Amino acid sequence: MLLGVNIDHIAVLREARQINDPNPLDALGICKFAGADQITIHLREDRRHIHDNDAKAIIEQSPLPVNLECAIDEEIIDIVCKLKPSRATLVPEKREEVTTEGGLNLNTYYTKIKKAVKKLHDNEIEVSLFIDPTKEMIELSSKLKVEWVELHTGTFANVYAMLNSNLSQTHHSIEELELPKKVLKDLLHKSRKDIKKSAALAQELNLKVAAGHGLNYQNVGLISCIKTIEELNIGQSIIARSVFTGLEKAIKDMKDLV
Ligand code: PXP
Image 1 (cartoon, protein in one colour):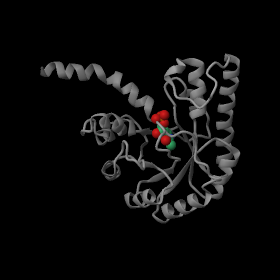
Image 2: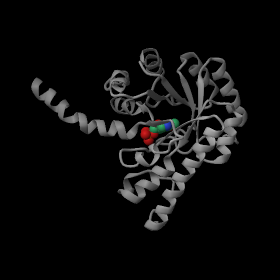
Image 3: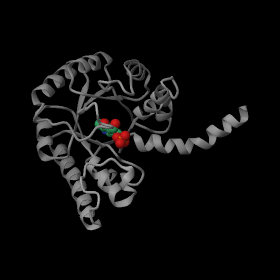
């Protein structure tokens, strides 16, 4: 299973202070050394974490292929074509969202997406569509002749968190907070089955399959064992854990200096 590491979350921390520390560029060598297969970043329309100069430097200097997530906005697609990452993942984007909520609606935006895919292909950039795991979205992806689909695992991850952890700490798309365990277990089973069935259909239609969103050290095993998924893109949980796995050395280094 390939692992793409989403390093946006390093830029989120930097933006809290609006200085150049921590610099996501410094993560590239560590990601490679640690065995990651890909760097994933998201150039948002509002540039709230990754900026144009980050994207440029990361793509130029990364020892790993770069997967650049972006909206189906003409201006952004033109920038992506100039930046030339190995892959562009088209994602839905809302300014008010905390993170990417739900997959791209390939029905509503079919013509716009088709145009974006053509432009990216003309610039020799392979394309992935971040979609909900449904038959309809897979079939439309195949019609759009993209190389990859990335299945949104957010519903699965949210239900998993509702079953196994403190709900108040999670953002979730399921309305009812007080669902009985049995219902949550059924929902978890269904959301995983949707992912598995969609991945199998995508593979049958010659699409390469990635998945991501909300995957963490507890829930990843239930997804990584699905053989038809080739790659996972994970960010929040890796960067969150690195705070704690790196904290002891960071304090010791400072203690030596003071
Ligand atoms: N894949 C896509 C397309 C995403 O938008 C995100 C979120 O930035 C991820 C994967 C990673 O999600 P998380 O940060 O929850 O691991």
